[in-house]
Amino acid sequence: MCLEGERACPPEDVGGVSGYEDFLEIIHDPEHGDPEHMISWAGGGYDSEAFDPLSINKELRRYAQHWPMSYSVSLRTHYEPLPPVTSIDRCVAVIKPRKPFFEWLQSLPDWDSDITLKALRSDSMAILISEFDSNEEALDYVEDNYHLFFEIQLHNWHRDNRLWPEKLTLTKFRSWFKVEVHSLVHNVLYEELYREWPIRTRRLSKK
Image (cartoon, rainbow, N blue to C red; front, side):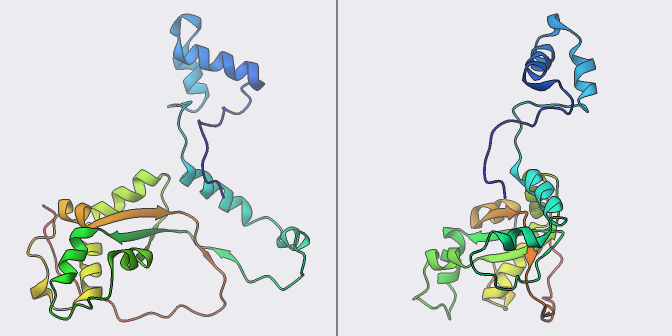
């Protein structure tokens, strides 16, 4: 797993360190060559400062699917059986409550006063979404479908929608929840997934 880093990978066959330095000089200074030709050769739209751990981890995950599990066993001190690890082609969106959502919960008639905002955030709602090429695209998807995620979150705490806020807007969603996206999803169990009955949601305006 890649946790952090800096800058983009040099283009393939750029010619080593010196070739990459020449490449950067050309694309940033037209007087030293043909930048459009070089950028087109590199696949177009090359940004030497770009770094996206989400796309990098997707590539690592695809590679890991073909990596023999026996290699990881050889590095262990104890040779216990490995669990059946399979990669799932999904991302996880974690919807973490903010203070305004917690204040709404406190206004409910059956609210448990012993629950804190810190406790809510330590065990937040997680949703499986499609894979995306970047973290920004995944976040855009969540916001495009914010009304659904908003209703699921409200339904989890109170099923009577008469006590829900009247207008579930994107602005309110942003102020009530913090969204985190994680790209590495694995299944280590043989058991089938348990599915509950679907939540019935209303059709809402996205204004």
